[in-house]
Image (cartoon, rainbow, N blue to C red; front, side):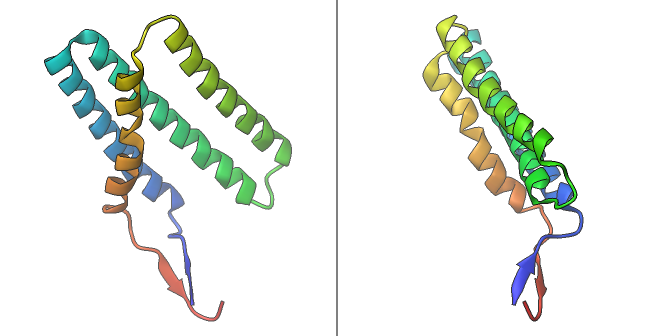
Length: 130
């Protein structure tokens, strides 16, 4: 017996993105309230980076698993995703816009958002015979 994803594959991602957004906003507000604007902005940017990375990764995996999808756009999306993530983080840190610990706290909303979002997602269906 194997499990298959729910037919509404976007539904699980939607719940995760909502949880990630709420965690990012809460952490950013906490950073503003207790440590000032720079920490709040850094945490918010980290959460935005996490959400963007998750969205791009979901599109990338969906494209890789779809047998009808052409492989060239998927490869370009993967290249752009990694270049944007690493290049963007480098520029933010090099220009002094964000602080590393605060950015990491914001990006840390990503795994927490994934876990919390799974509580609202429909369970995978069991499929007999495979």
